[in-house]
Length: 181
Image (cartoon, rainbow, N blue to C red; front, side, top):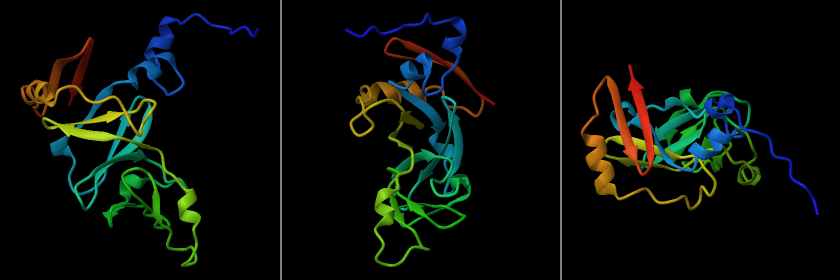
């Protein structure tokens, strides 16, 4: 029978929120506010959440998308990409990604090429409630835990949205303190 080594979690581990850290894995199991809806205009918005660089956008059908900031092809920033044709187009070679990170188009590939079907960009599900945009960054992205009752979210979020935000939100048993300058 194999033994599993466990190591003691230190105070420093609790302040690190990357994907492979204890605190990061725990926080990713909740829907987290990542932006105010009014901050998302017709151009992509770069966000950094839980130590990941991401780009938030709304496609031409008004669907929200949250992808890894750097293109899977050459690593250029999708923050400078164009929102069009059901997704976001990389500014460097023109690869087009939908809101779930699927590559829809690769202009430099031959017309009958199926290579774009093999490419997938990092993505996370997002929802908009009460003027805030929430992301789920945990396991099971195709079927994340449902958000709480939307009436509660709307009532909670509508009461504190301001340009300078310093407040405490209580969701379930988690208390988050947000500061926006």
